[in-house]
Image (cartoon, rainbow, N blue to C red; front, side, top):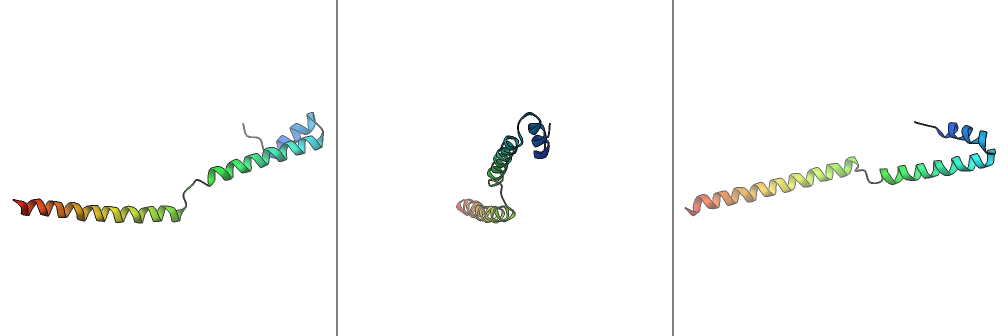
Length: 78
């Protein structure tokens, strides 16, 4: 069930006086906005994903060379 702020205001203004309905809808809207901002602040941006990608590539290349050197070392050991 989705109710917009204007629908909520009209429903509340029928039961309560207009000042109380307005203050309640303003409070609810502020709480919802704060919750949305809090949840979206934890999302990764495109820049964060690009940095993670380059870091992963660096680690994979480094591990590949280390593994290649270990295999070459085992080959020459015998």
